[in-house]
Structure formats: structure tokens, C-alpha cells
Amino acid sequence: MTASEMRKLLAAILIKKGMYAVEAETVAQRMIDADIMGRSEFGCLSVVESVKSIDLGDIDPRALSMKKSETPATAWIDANEGMGHVAASKGTTEAIEKAKAVGIGAVVISNSQNLGSPLVYARLVAQAGMIGCCLTSPPSSPEMEAELEEQTFFGRQPAAFAVPAHEATIGYEFSFGVDRPLRHQIPAELSASLGLLQCLLTSGLTGAKTPPEKTRGPLNERFEHFIIAIDPAAFAGPEKLAKTVESLVRHVDSQENSPAYRAAITESPFAPEESTLQQIHELAQKLKVSVN
Image 1 (cartoon, rainbow, N blue to C red):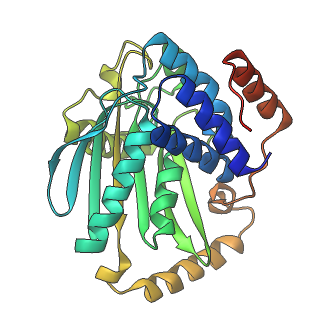
Image 2: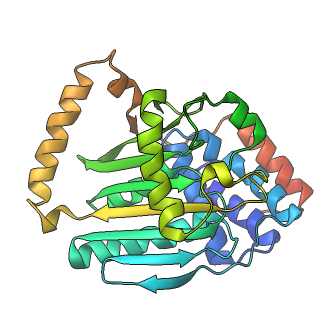
Image 3: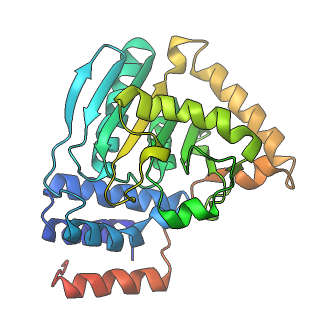
């Protein structure tokens, strides 16, 4: 199945569950983007969990993301309990446009649900020729908390950054504590300081609960996100950034056994596994969704 065919199928499933067509297509594309960046946990198969959350009433499929405040370089968006993919896509576009105008754009999103992989949104910024970073502050389930080391008292908080590299992008996605799907974990000794910073940029700027305060579980609490875009044109310029990126990438590539080499994430062709296709087709059949 091609990416275009999968996008149509995923969008049709989400439309069937009450989403507006444009927003359903946005979510479908973000899921495909996650697969392209090697983040299958948040890829096309995640539509199954999204449908369950909609059925349980934890996601409002008709929610409209609204701006609460704005300056030339910043914006605060209320996701109104909608899918995080929608609000984060809108926030990323805002951050890029503001960075084009004033050199830097920072957007915070509150009252959201899961955005999927933060790397997807950092990559969107990188595709615009900028340095992108995305942080998210999700609730943790008791099962997750049991896996986290004692020092990771700020919870499981995925984060990512990406930069343009040649005609593609390169990025890193990392988290705190035990998080097997991610390729890079922040050591426990750094989790307190970096976790505090992440809490300040997500929970702090939106006035929301911090991860340790979110005790009702992932489906009963909301997520906060922070997205930033930095335009090199406002500084030394894109050519200088490109040279720096090329130098750093060469250095990382020369050390195949280093943590940096193993953690780097680049784009790959869209090629979902057969088991993924089967589960999505089963969901489509259950919902009586077909795409010609």
C-alpha cells in the first residue's frame, strides 16, 4: 500500500468517527510521517488506539483548536481536548511563520491529547529549512511509573529536535527513564534538571499540571506541547547552518558504535508491515469504511 492510499484509508476511518475531513487528513499524514521517521509506535497503527479513545469520549473528534494569546514571536493554542496531531500541526505552522517573520517562533499547546511522535513536528520545521524542536508533557500510567527509575520523578516526557541535512532531515528523539521504543534515553542523573526544564516549557507556560500531578491516567488527563522554530536566516544564515550540519553529520557517521550514531533518525521509505496493514483493514471493515 502506498502512502497516498494509506492516507486516504486512515482519513476515511477518522471521518467515520466524526472528524472533519481536513483534520482527519492531517492526522493521517502525521501518522504516516511517524512511520517514515521510524517511529512506528506512533505510526499508522496508532489509529486503532485513537478510535478507541474517541469511542470512550477521551478525544473530541470535532474539537477546534483556538488561539488563547499571541505575540509576533509566540502563540498559545487551546486544543479543546482534540487530537494532538491537529493542534500540533497548527502550532508547527504558526511557529514556522513567526520564525520567518521575526527569526524565532515559539508555540505552546494546552488541553490536548497525544500528538504522536514529537519528532514528526520537529521534522516539519526542518523541512522549512529551520532548526525545530518539539516537547510534550504526557500523563503517565501506573504501569509506566513502575518502570521509571526513582530519579525520573518528572515522568516520561518525549522530546525531539531536527535540522535540514542535504535534501532530507536528521533528528533525535529522546525521553526519560525506561522507554524501549525510543532509541535514546536521557540518563537518570540528568533527568531532574532536563525534566524540570521540560516541565517549565510545557506545564509551566500553560499553567497545567506537571507529570507527577497527573494521577488519573493518560486517558483522563491532558497533554501539553511546546514547539519552537529557529530561522537561520535571522542569524549567520542557512549556508552556514548547512556547513555546520554537514560537519556534525560526518563526525557522527564516522563513529558507527557511538550512542549518537545509533540514536540519529533519518527518513526511510514508507513500508508498513503486513500485520499493521491487516489490523487497519480489520478496523476499516468493522467500521464499514471503504476507499475506492
